[in-house]
Amino acid sequence: MQGKTIGGAFSIGQGAAEACLDVLNKCDGDKAIAMATYPSIVPPPKRFVALQTAFNFISWNIRHWITSQARGIRTKSIWGGSLIDDGIGKAIYQDFLPETLANGRFIAAPEPHVVGRGLEHVQPAFDFQKKGVSATKVVVSL
Image (cartoon, rainbow, N blue to C red; front, side, top):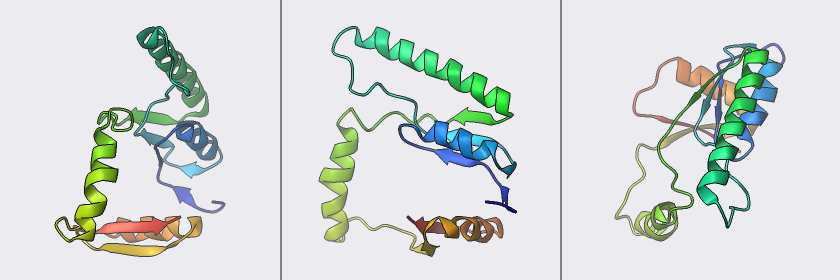
């Protein structure tokens, strides 16, 4: 990333926000993180579930806020509900989509514009997207 200006970061999954904080701390550019997931307790608690989950969530947010403020990094949460643990995610992404995509009943559209494979293609993908795209999936395979 040396010599490059970053446009921010997108975190999704356990530990991703912390990793983004570490990366952005060493970069020039827009120091902002869009966070699509919140921390979860692994393994899930068996007793006092609501209390432990609330404590974990609040304490993580306080630590995360202090770290981001100290490093001058803005953060925003993207809330869309959790499909991981409620059975809906499995119903959609394991039970429904694979079969309907395979038999053509459901079509993934538009066609992706694959920029490349590997982290070295992330910046060219951002550059392509920045030029202006419409109804296009800009993809970097990892």
